[in-house]
Length: 387
Length: 247
Image (cartoon, rainbow over all chains, first blue to last red; front, side, top):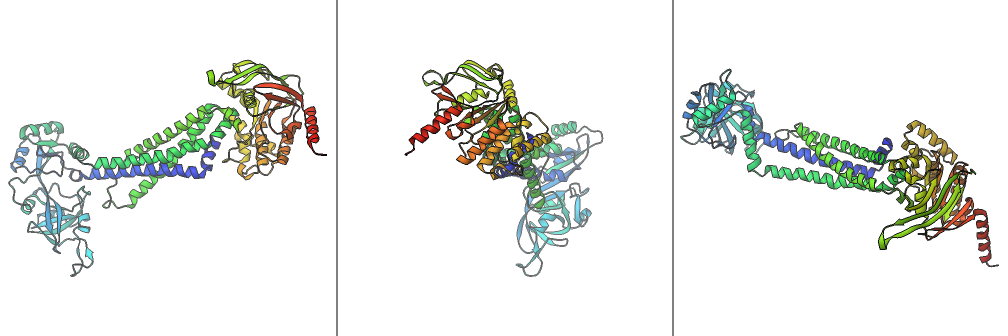
């Protein structure tokens, strides 16, 4: 009877494709919107992932997320360095500044200043130039996405003519100070989607407007054998600053964006809409499909089909539609993710998302199947005699 | 005909609802029938025919009276046992055929066998043979919707007989068909369905097929009002029709 159940489903092509379309679309909406949400949220702590050398990040206690820089006095660096168990501590500057481009245009840029001596915090993947070139006068690195988009320059003398990506040798101004591009690096896309400029700490301070407090964060490496948690508590106790492991700092950042912005609600609504589409289209259509076949189920019941046999048929029909719809939806979502470049769209399909979609589709299919089964169980076989 | 009692019911009562809204569908039906017979239940709408065959087919429980169906009282069986008893012993021909449109003709015929757990290849083989007997050789792989009404009812006949039931219940088998097709369908029911070890119960309004039955059981208002030999009943009907014709 399993084969007959499947033939009943596949044979009613209008309803079958309707159910399939509903489930596919629901899966697509749920998974794709979740993946974009995860992609966006992951970008909020991109800088933390860019600097894997640090065991701890030390910042002002009022800091809410990684981009929320609350400058500290430079003496904070020495206070951290003096804590027992710290192998090294490096300064990090981070601020949004306006860059004046060679063509006269202005562009907001995220300027990151890394330790002059060790260059800890400099980008790991260099596409052009050498990280050590950052020590040259006025040297800066730009990242590929910014260089190829917001920082593009006219390729000819005509300012309105074709444009080319920013390249090594280009000169721009940051706070009326000269900055020379000495390298291009590839970095993780950030949430703010502004070009990131890397330079040394002291040069970055020079680029920024005068401020007594210039230290954005301190990157800390624990001494060999030092317990990280213990060091974290010791730094907080002895300096009055806040220290976070990269994981904690990422979660703190994520927590801020989740609780303080409307992003989760917006995406949540889109995901809920996907679920409702599934319920409204696929669920209802599956239920109608069962209703349409009720007289045949009734005839089978009269002929001696047990309730278990009929329920098995309905369950198999629901399961098949669910698996196919889910598979197609996930496939389309993956194809969508693969077809759009990462710098265009934040899209991160982590393994939990297909699980989430599977759960949603399961709820839709089980719900619709259960209602259908109820109808089949309550079916009075003598009704087949009613004509 | 076999002397064994296929149906023996006395004082069968069935009431729907309770209190003021109660409807007494059967008010004490008495009927006996033997294997090998074709019994036609006739009567006006609402006289209790459908209720009576539903009980005879093991689809409905009675409220009172006694019933033996092939030696069994279906009301002594629990739901599952009754379903299994029905699966083994009862075949159905429905007014609207009730053929599953998404599957082939031969698969429709095989349903009662598949329900019993028979292997698919064997069930299909047996169904093919029966389809040949009802004149549908070559149409086995068609969908039911590709067949005419008469052909669909032939498929339904094959489906009702494929598992060799002892009781064949035919509910208005010709009402969805034109006169000539109805006659051919009933010839087939008579030819293929009637066997010494099988009782055929036919519910019909169609006087043109009365002659296929052995006995006519008239029902009215929940009671069996008259049981007549089909031959004499048909002869009387023909005489009445002839008398009404202008000379």
